[in-house]
Length: 283
Image (tube, rainbow, N blue to C red; front, top):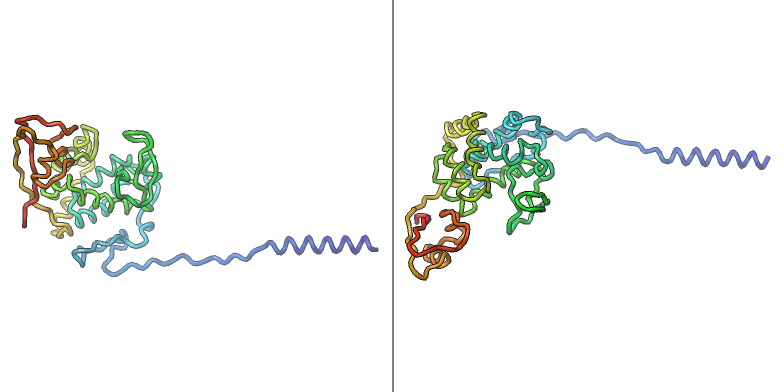
């Protein structure tokens, strides 16, 4: 009798223990994303230009506007064309250049670095970068690259990167749809070490007719947030005892910019050497 009672108690405990492990799961409804009246429902981008000349906001909840994985180059273009045009309106960088750089640097979105970091333009950490990062072998082993939560932020950082660094300033004197000058100018400014970088960008633009997106933006007649700055270009003949540093101080430009403009790999200059000087025109 005692044994039977013991068996019953064991069975009750086992059953109760198993039952206590079950949990009630309440399915939460999927959040509804509100699309504003002046917003394109397909891209999340404003239909018109910026309402405030100082603000050009990125879409809210960007995940709904990009589908992954991207299968090929044509799909990459279809995915990011609107974003490239949006950035062109905001910063003045040709959409064709942005798309071609993205295709080339990211392997049409399928490159290892891009898949790890959402970095579509191969932008490295550099001094002052306080965002997320990851390491990847490029020109050297284990280089530091910027990391983003979404490709959208990579496109915006690309625009800020080019428009905020002095060595790229001269590019903004070119017409917004002159992709050839932009392609060669990027190489001249040191964006890439590949000597054939301009030709590769131009080939992609012409193969996929990417300049059509430049034309669409230009036809829209939208003003850019960052107005191109004007520069005066002249030459300086090196005299005895002068150094790059002294010349940079004289014209209020950096040594790095002097080297970039004149395609110098070292700080060595010689008497009689002609240097190109570029200064921003005073307003």
